[in-house]
Length: 369
Image (cartoon, rainbow, N blue to C red; front, side, top):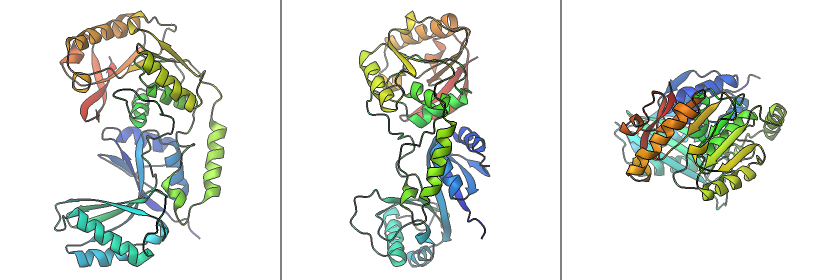
């Protein structure tokens, strides 16, 4: 019996599509299309489980259930009812339907969601009262074509399960990992996170360096599907554990001048089981000295729109120029920040590796030229 294949869509933050595509290729999965906001690939359950387990820069992974054309609600109901819902949704599973509509005659998203739920009831029966997380179903109406997708991930994939302590303006784990991958980081050289905050860059770097699967400790929506294969999942976990290293090839250093930030980072490091792997210290970046001739230095400093515009920011960026340009001149350097006058204060030449948004602000991953 031939293996049943599906079409999948990996949702990414806009700007990280190519990074995610490279991750898929490294897993032996060949993407067939890259579009703004995601990457498409084809495969079976093994490929789906593997992608959820290993992708570091992805937000969630959807299964394309089907597409119907409809210009009125009765037709939409009729055609949605015919889709093979039972392959991915159990009859008693709570459901949550999310809809967007553009350039279509049917543009009332609430009504579209109601029609979809009615189609689900006809196909599967009504929802039961349950404490389980609802199965997310995404409908996208565009030019009267309704694309239906089933979420396989559950919680957003940036929720690795380790960030318990937070500080102001945190960077999502998926963005941090994607930036590290864009810099070519693989753990073979030292890494310095100069403004570590809650430790996200350092922790994601450690997961990369140890070759630890970011999804190994969490639950996924596909685990509640009718055709979930727990044996396959256990096999993939076993293979992931076998690939994991016992220690990082090179040091990972994380520094912040705020004792509360270091305390938060320490809690998160302990939560993910990396105590002793990441070297945390409280201090000013102006006092840093390189312990190694080469490495990667990265940081996510404050920018005016995020934490208030003031003269202290210019002073901070002047200090960054000294650290990046003089003290650590032999190191690779990368900064997340807006391509604005603020970066010109450093007097250094930076080139953008990625452009994306962080907290609603347009920023770039800028690499020291």
